[in-house]
Length: 170
Image (cartoon, rainbow, N blue to C red; front, side, top):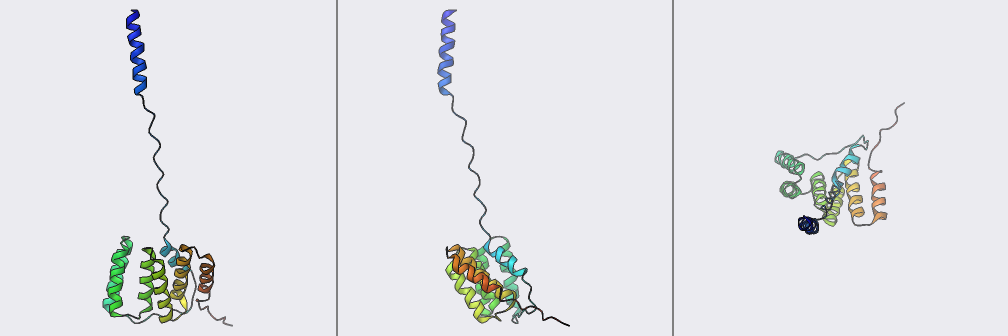
């Protein structure tokens, strides 16, 4: 009996050495990537302006824009960028296309190129209204992403000057 007790004790001790610690808790998921394009579009949409200027547009460009929007919704910003480049081959100076390309580049993290295309859009556009706001807010986003908070703040201020407000009527 004593030997069976000894064998039992040794077995328990041996098995105790095989025990492992519980696995560590899983890593928390990374925070979602910041949707800089969504932020600037939402802010621009909330900016009241009585004047909006839109260029005339070839129907094939409209089709390409719709396809680019679908690609963007699917988070395929590279495909959206290719479609917008196709549209720009038809209308190379269309400020709305230039801005959309800038936004696709921003979504891809190509901040300097995005800023360049937003400035080109601003230069070719009416420089008033919601698209002007989108131009400057995109520049603010690129500067913020690059750590240039002073220029980001200046671009945000500049966007505030884009809306054309209604004249008071008496």
